[in-house]
Image (cartoon, rainbow, N blue to C red; front, side, top):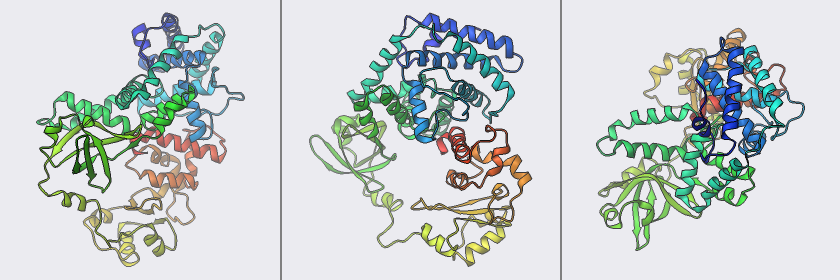
Length: 490
């Protein structure tokens, strides 16, 4: 099945027709024809179709230098320390010229999304497809028409973010659906999962309201794309790549208040002062509340999320009025400790572990003995679960102010620490890489600690990463893999 012009145009942020649409649609189909003829037996047709579309969007983008790839590469340099994730063979690299590393990464990314598993970066099949695709792009680079309208239309559209909160949010929604490095099936999965989890609200919210709530919430609270950053961070990077620093500076100041419950503390003609259940106070105009002043004043509070943008707090998504009937103190007590209350923080634990952040145990019983006798922790309802664990490790997150302890089973066999008598190299060579993507295997905090301290050396022999990488590059690639596979949990 051929790629249509309408389908191809969906990869443009502005989604407007351009004079070169027919050329690039034909280009995508020619590339698909070549790849299908050479590798149709080794790859699913949909995989090759996605590869052809994405590589053509990349090609059109760098020919016009419209900023999508350039902004991604800028982010990679800032976050990872190199131009392209996973591949580092280009002797000379330019953001606005075809790059074999870029082509290989885009194919890797498509394969990772379609198959929902680790693609092996050194796979001979992926390499062969990349070589053929790169040759085709390189052959046509000098003669390809520059889509000047693409950059113009994209710039016009993303610059509307400066017009206010609602226009900015609309840009984010379009960005997540048409940015060729961000858009993907993951968003539909997020929406479907969200609809299932919100069935209990069906009597109070229509399906359209639920979709609006999920979509607007995603724009400020969820990670997306291969770098697992917020949609507004992708937008900021694109704006800076296009030289629109004034708009980007507004985006950089965004503050997303945690979705929670609020008590109305004061009212005036213009708006209200709300106190969150976490103790933070914000001023919001009536215009932002999406219901009339008369209706809002019937209640003494609300639930919702608010975003700081351009010097004001803005309601994001759905507002639920609530009448607490003097019960808000109970709500706050759940989140704010009483004066004088002390938590067992990281320092408390480190004093009792001789400064060790990571400890290893033969089984759950040994860990419980340690928790009771050394840490002096009281019993808990989780003891039966801990007792059933094999080879659990105990991790102290020094960056967390609260809830700084993680107990993780069946992980220490992969951890190559000189303090770990249970490390099993043969087991680690087969299983250590699973820690990068399985969010249930260990916390992201523990995973980052293991990567940063070179405690997962056997991942280098898994075939997932390019061979013979310098240690700093391998660490960055491991962090990238964790980001792209864990996404919301990174």
